[in-house]
Length: 246
Ligand SMILES: NC(=O)c1ccc[n+]([C@@H]2O[C@H](COP(=O)([O-])OP(=O)(O)OC[C@H]3O[C@@H](n4cnc5c(N)ncnc54)[C@H](O)[C@@H]3O)[C@@H](O)[C@H]2O)c1
Image (cartoon, rainbow, N blue to C red; front, side, top):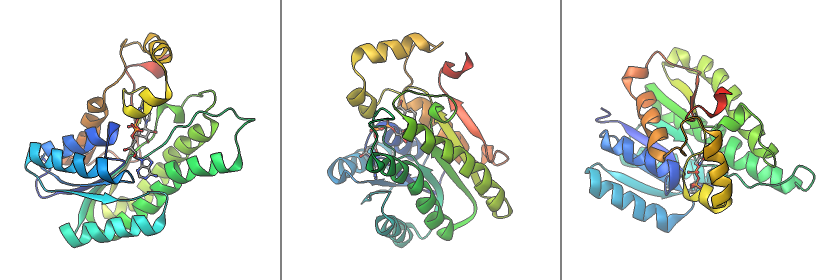
């Protein structure tokens, strides 16, 4: 259980982030939900607070903007005094072929998916006491290739390497830094970018023969956020129904 812990979850208004925020709240953590979709985020925070009875706070934040991120952690410190758990979840996956990809397309994905992880984690560690947890949602796209997602695969691969280095730097403070790498998870983002046929093809590729659910990722994050995972650091935990086994 995570009583008296405060967790910040980015991209928490919907999808995997929502699943993670709900699970951490069910485990008794107070949760700060950060998302740039302000109205959905407010509704989600109220819903989770009502369902679990813990304190939830919605903060408008574009994770790729340092001033927004600074405000997120200032607001967190003002309301909860400290932060124990940071879940870097916000991310985008716009499909674009390599030759059609503009410099702006590349920079956008790197800024939202990778730079954000650096600026959010640095701001969090400054107000984190000893024994904190940083968990970042990367992807199996950090381990295997996906056509039309070169920028995305680069951003997610960057997260894995960054995590191992930061885990070493923060070991003296007993701050665990880990990655969860999901396979295909049924979320609003995936449903908007892949039609039914493409989703069926995904299911055929997955040994477990189903798409993952946000709960599959949330359960793994909740474990890594708990004291039961105190001796795990710098690791990439794959949660993909066996996709990357073959
Ligand atoms: N769904 C999958 O199959 C899958 C697989 C592997 C990894 N992932 C990763 O999981 C994470 C969540 O994916 P999802 O499928 O739930 O996405 P989603 O599109 O369903 O939800 C993403 C949430 O993040 C928010 N967001 C996007 N950009 C933001 C920004 N700049 N600042 C703040 N909030 C922002 C959105 O408003 C939304 O609420 C991403 O990092 C994604 O790369 C997803």
